[in-house]
Image 1 (cartoon, rainbow, N blue to C red):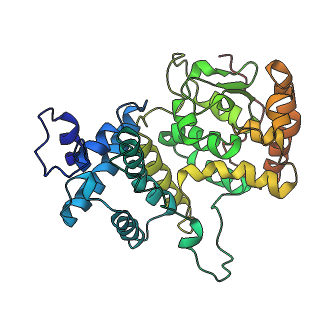
Image 2: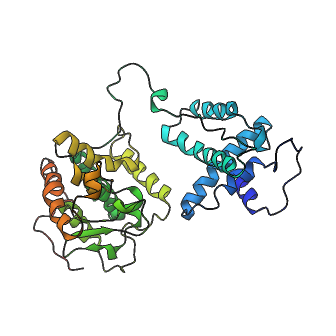
Image 3: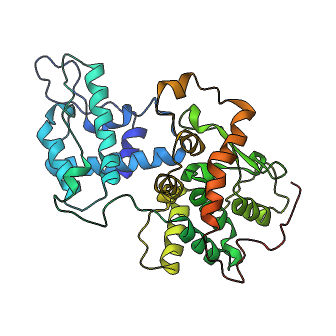
Length: 346
């Protein structure tokens, strides 16, 4: 990330370059990458990741002997894409590496439309390009079935130092939380008396803002973890950087079952997969996990706001999750499901 940070902090005039006919401003590749980021409202973590991705592309163009944006061609972008694919990187990783390049290409072409074309205009990245034309029974999005999530939670609860990690996994695996939703959640957003949790604040869109009834297991684990923390304290403390949480979950998954190959962010696939397989996937599952409704009628005419939707979440979603949990063969000494229900007032 050093190259990108140097470009960002350097206020000195850019080195002179041969001026080509018809070009108002020769712009360096590093300048284009960084200046196209200026108006982005990112968190510190996202900014750090974007600069790292910019830095990777800058090191690649240095190897090609390229300095100025007008030297770039579509063939260079394709070559960079192929270099990423040759490393057998995941689809999402390649997409993130290409994102700053696409953004810079769009930014340059918008600011100087007569001088620069969008060289990434025809760039396509398809999942099909990464796969084989042969049938593979192991292909598809990875996920853990609900009973397996319960097994993993049972493993985590057997060590006290894993309590905060346990809560994060429960929110993702049994309530469909996004990773950042689980890590940003504070105790002030949880009402243990009502057994609800509210997601608001820094969200992707208005459908991410929602109030959800808690699944019983999640409610129990939250009560177990609550010890008079301040309202603004994080429910999953100790993982300010998302990477730290992801590394910790990945490490514990391998210790629990070395055969499991799952990214921590994919824990939220559990609820939607169970709903689709079980025949109860629909509007309320989509809203429960924070997805936008699929149809115009659902988006604009369905009266689901306010308190009305909470009991519907219970009847249409939580009841089905609880039914899946009941199929779990719990060990006699499990700490995931309590004997008599413990009640603690928040």
